[in-house]
Length: 208
Image (tube, rainbow, N blue to C red):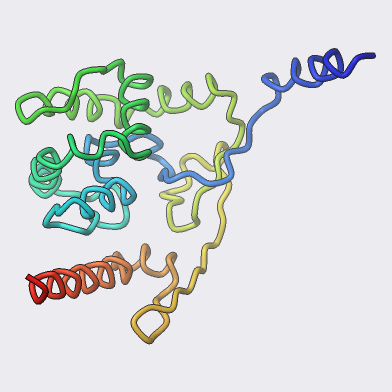
């Protein structure tokens, strides 16, 4: 048997194997985005925008499901003015793929058009059958989430959980674990990030 034949014999059954997605930023009971903000203001995308001077260097409330529409919309409008400058980074590239593949939307996000995509995403936010069909189409058998994102156990048949207890040493003290931050609705990383941003701005002003 040639090495090429052996490779084909091994690769052919791989797409049929169920996938274990070991880490996803989803929430039990809400396995889809609830609006444009869930993707456009994902924390890595926010880091890109912040690096370009976006005035708000923090994400929305840590646990998804309780964002006030006005808060989210203000942040979306703020992000749009910087979005064109981050088109070559990986986060906007991934967001464009999600828009195209899941929502069949290939238009550029503009100040006068983002409401249409936001409404489209919101329209499927509570369609749990659709959420599961996406996982089935991708052959994802189980999805790994942090325990704090379990919701009310609605999706326990599709999801398994990990107890995340990451401790970070920042600013001379240990930060709270990620799980505790999410359960309590706080975010020590956001506080650290904003403090760091203020120091950087002060340094730039002192040099000018």
